[in-house]
Image 1 (cartoon, one colour):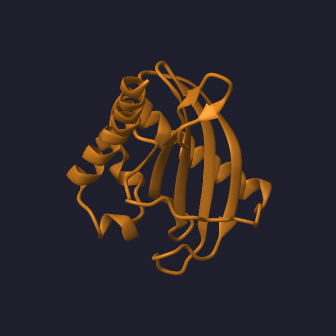
Image 2: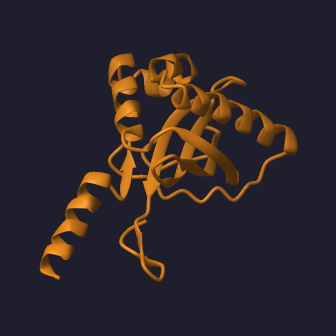
Length: 162
């Protein structure tokens, strides 16, 4: 039993329960649903961004990154971090949007108009929840955050982490 607990702990640490480019996923409640047109623009931007990641071309996402984030990191660091987040997920299978909303302030970020979109995504080795956060940069939605959340479920639905 002790070896099983050690194995579960090691798998959780290696697999990661909450992995993101930033150390902490911002706790954001985007209560404004926006207009259908706003939702479609944000959805299209997120799907385009995620499509590049799914194709294994993280470096190609740099033009989609908001100037606010580009000022804080390099293209090499961005691409390397994205590749690290995707490590171990396997090939993309399916993605469904589960939430979309808009907010005018994020923790530790400059004031502006932000969009948060979350997807339930299935890869060949695991299922995850992906969160893409974007900023309206003069009528262009630029990526300012990408987060991947994994859950490990045992037996009768017991969760190790979310």
